[in-house]
Length: 95
Image (tube, rainbow, N blue to C red; front, side, top):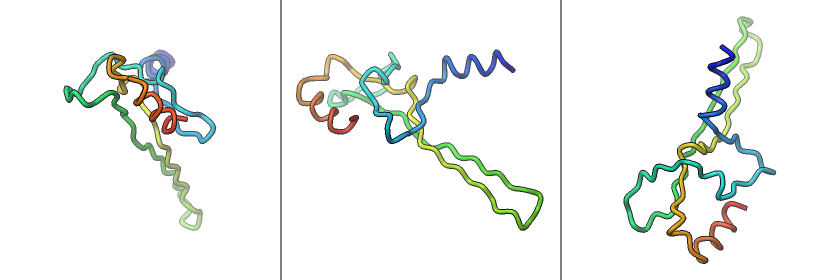
């Protein structure tokens, strides 16, 4: 179990959204560029995770937690396409 968790943490890196934690270009870690469109400079792989906790007591409330996640290992950037314009635009979005 410990080995599985360690591998998941090291190779399945994700960032759970927090207002105080902003993305930077170094968060885009995938070497694979999955889009061949010449206009695409970066690709963000993100999604949601949720959990539900329900008690056997029917009068207990159900607890639902939803998290927005950013997958570093599936998000990439094309450094050859990042110019001053893209860099400035991304600063306003990422930060």
